[in-house]
Image 1 (spheres, helix red, strand yellow):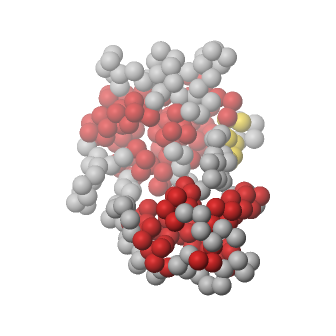
Image 2 (cartoon, helix red, strand yellow):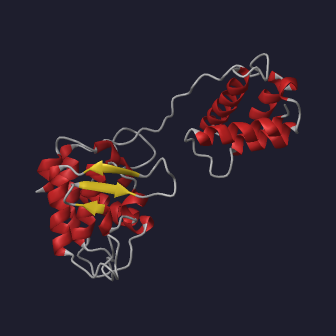
Image 3 (tube, one colour):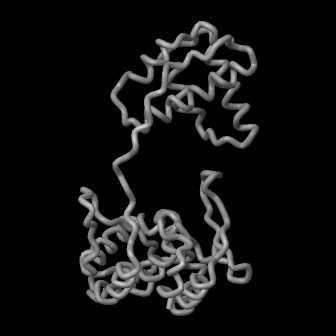
Length: 259
């Protein structure tokens, strides 16, 4: 069996069992271009090492490429298409220096208390109620910001108390339960911002009814964070982020913030 046939067969087999390869496997495709359509049995450790150590890439990318190639060759080793695993030694895993920020109870309270003050300027395009509800939504679900701003009203099922996240990527589409406190937050928000659902389907929108962009919400949160005086004091070069609210999903302090 030759390399190109092996890659195509492997990808189709993985898809059969639910793996997501929307456009094939970029790593395996790149290795095919690098090595050429050679027999699987002729591939040697030095060829894979040269491919992995080619253009300078991030350590995490190197590890991901190594893992995908190893899974590929293990697949064919188990089917006797090759006689030995041609993988070079794996590099030791290096712990990432990046650490998400964990907000304290008082910092979350300060952020929420600052919303109305920070958004009172007429130039602010997002209503304070929307900013507060979106922050609590991220806090209570662990959703990505991109998922939150694309959320539609129909994705909330108050009868079943569930939230459905839709995505073109099957592994990201999911339905999760709505905790009691988030349920009350969203019900109050929906009642206070009732609009023509057919015309404006999005859950979180700007004052003019247009959908909120991730950039606009990030900018709003940056102003909010500065006004509340919430900063990192652990020596990190990066600041506190809206994304870090995901670390607090299902936190026991949600009830005190939702009131």
